[in-house]
Length: 69
Length: 471
Image (cartoon, rainbow over all chains, first blue to last red; front, top):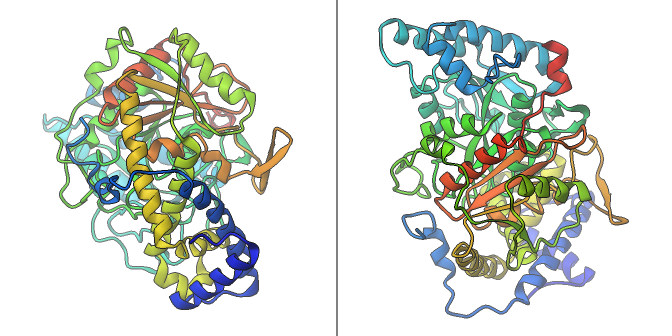
């Protein structure tokens, strides 16, 4: 689910960019692989946090209305 | 003592008082402000566009209203500038980018600009920022870096760097900025001014270019708590054109500023997974001490909150720019290009998990405020770094100089909390700030406590050397 190794990230970045129609030169690709690696590490920490399945992701979009006091 | 009596450039309330009482005119005030912008901007690079004709026309209208015996407005004749992601009719809304500079000029003003005009304020122009608000340092590749008025070789912070620097250099007493992960609070702290990010959904963003819609806030920067409050009061009110804007009537805070902090439960927030220079915590502790605060409260899961915020803003921001990333990536600022490209590749499950975590985190933070009214925390982990510097050393390790600036601000905007960044008095030559924050919709408590700390002289917007050279 979360690409973590350097090879996995490199391959994921190249394939996903191709699907999205984004062309990158070698320099950009190196930067993006590095930055995506940082995001992957953050995602790994996030995924390790146990959350009840009853927590509704959609509810957050209604946060600003008159709720919450 | 007022700013004018103090020999300083007048602040928001001083200007309103002087114009409303006939001691000066809005046109004279505007001409003086334009002269200061002309003198200082070549060195600071805060303004990217100066709307001279518009400013003089708006000022003349204020003077005409007063001459006709009509109320010139609560911000009569106050010169201000806006981050260049706010629409100003007749100008392209460049959002710090080359790409948007090619788009047609805005047909009308952003809602907040309309509200400021209705209040009698006078728009002097648009201000520099990180491209599409993605950054903390305003080292803009296309329009140059904004320089910190306290040390011209240092960054102003970002992404509302022009907004903070223009106020710090006393070009204008008031600006508007936007804040997604800290983009009002970080530059306010580094430039030694007050920057206010109200509750998510309090102020409408209509006519402001979004960065990450579920995080974007807008708000004022100024040189005192009362100036922030007066402006915030003029900006409030619902707006159906912004789906995130709450249907709440205006809840003015200015009348509450004098109530003090007596009876409020205040604590220093802890639990940040953040390396910082000791002076950053010392600044927050000085403010706590001035308020008689000894209690500490630990925020829950702050590191994960920051991780989730980073993933979500990268993904939301990239989605907005996907077609340009595919068609003309080379036209982006090289720094933001990489950030947006990596955000475009974020898997949906990461985004949804981050959103579900956010729901949990908001509930936990909301619960915390059952036991405390107002919290304090550092605004940034260090003062302004040198322009061009990519790393800062903390505890013997290098951290990304720009990205790390958000460690204290990002977890608070993630929950949409109303937060003021305020300059702490008594530090070194480079400003450091404290964040004052409360539960959602309790802007009144934030500003009451800040007013108390300001009255105790723990908070003060220092005059910058760049300002003194002209004064």
